[in-house]
Amino acid sequence: MASRSDDRTEPRRRFLILHGWQNHRPVGHWQRWLAERLTAAGHDVCYPQLPDPEFPILKDWLAATEQALARAPGVEQAVVAHSLSCVTWLHLARQGSVHLPVGRVLLVAPPGPRFLAETAELRGFQLPPDALDVIHSGSLAVPRLVCADNDRYCQPPADAVYGRLCDVDRVNGAGHLDMAAGYGRWLSALRWCEDATYRLNAE
Image (cartoon, rainbow, N blue to C red):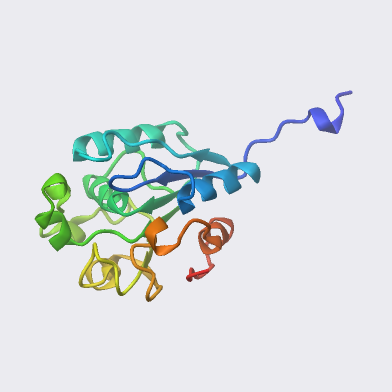
């Protein structure tokens, strides 16, 4: 009889972690820290490097995201997206991807329409004017949106732009919730991954 130490169990959850513009998944970023913590806890974690993060192309980011989702067909997943990947996710939901729905979605600090329009490298990521109205009702789990009042990439704040689609946690004074704002180790994100009812904060 095989010993219990020989038993193999599947990871309890699968997490897809998606980075933002100009992000090369650096050591010290809260998403890398989160991926390491979730992996150490026995979860299945996918944290891909998205194509050409300095000069991203929407169709390439959509394809890479779909490919990452397709690696676990039929398995409930949770998605943790930061910055430009939040907008990528909304495009994917609008298109009605065959790989959706997923179990849970966390959108952290999405850039605003004005920033996308004014930044040459990102104009291709702009959502159509009716995008938030035509996202397929069954294709996207109601996301949890986390944003700050002083995010330089989204003014007015993201809850005013995207809040009607989401369950919102506003963390005032947290900027873009990135390394520059001091987010290298973010316990709230880990706790949300462990418990979907957890309300995210600055800690």
